Amino acid sequence: MRESSKALRLLAEPYGPADRVKCAIWRAAKLADLSYWRCSDLWYLKAHRILPDEKQRILDALAEKQQAEERYELAKLRTRLATLESRAKKHDQSLDSETLDLFSWTPR
Image (cartoon, rainbow, N blue to C red; front, side, top):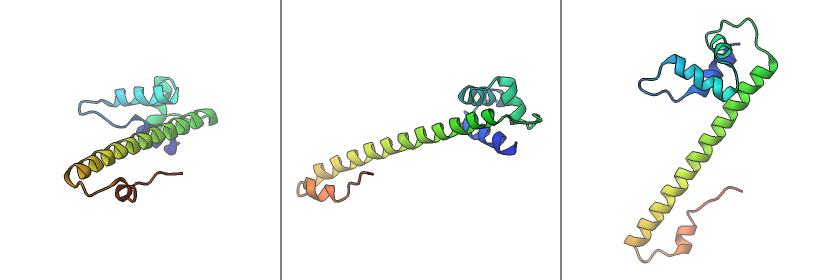
């Protein structure tokens, strides 16, 4: 039960400066496809039990969120790398694409 409560809290992140717990529970409930009250009971460990499909929905939603965050991070890094390569080429004309390609890496 604690695992699901912790997963719901992770699912609700990030919290805004004026974010209330109620908003975080709503966000987690929506992402996990649970009702607000069911999510609230799990959040505060008031539920007597958790159904296997509820637990799976929470874990699936958390995995999906983490994958989306990883894709976003990778896109940011690629953009940053492209910017740095552009600046390097602009300031040092002796750099050619082969030299810069030594530093590029793409996952397979």
